[in-house]
Image (cartoon, rainbow, N blue to C red; front, top):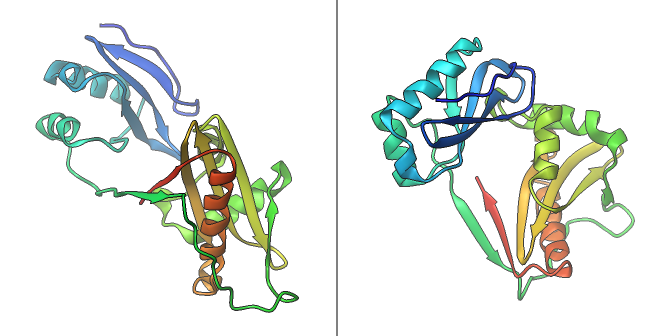
Length: 217
């Protein structure tokens, strides 16, 4: 077996054990919670390989482990190893051939504007993210960077009114578009800001050559 040493404060690192390949490290801002991403075929996720992966994470001081989203065959392997299901994620698809217009409940003068987000907006975006999601799903600086880097092409868009009250990260890989992250301030939810951001992201995907948009939730 071969493992790659890392510290909990570092980004995800490669881990290879008995033919099974993983990326592993800490889950976002949680120094006690490990994140394990299986990369190799399901048949490599043997009892021995998973036990050694858990031992390697334990040696780094982690108390618990969560996996990335896994398909049913991978799920079965982890359940056999003693993992319990935390949540079910749903993958949603939107064809981009015909995108309907979105009615907005504002006059042109009062309508909030979608703007390009910049690096100077990151702190405010992360503060909004922490108000929107529970602790487990909140992004930290590395998580936001991962969302932006998950596809070859990506963009950050924000809505200011006057401070940032909504944001979205969208990406494209070939003909596939992805809505990586969407958050609206809890005090502004129900105003149509999320609809604006989704509509804007889908139209951007189509302009950049994607024919389908994806989101998991």
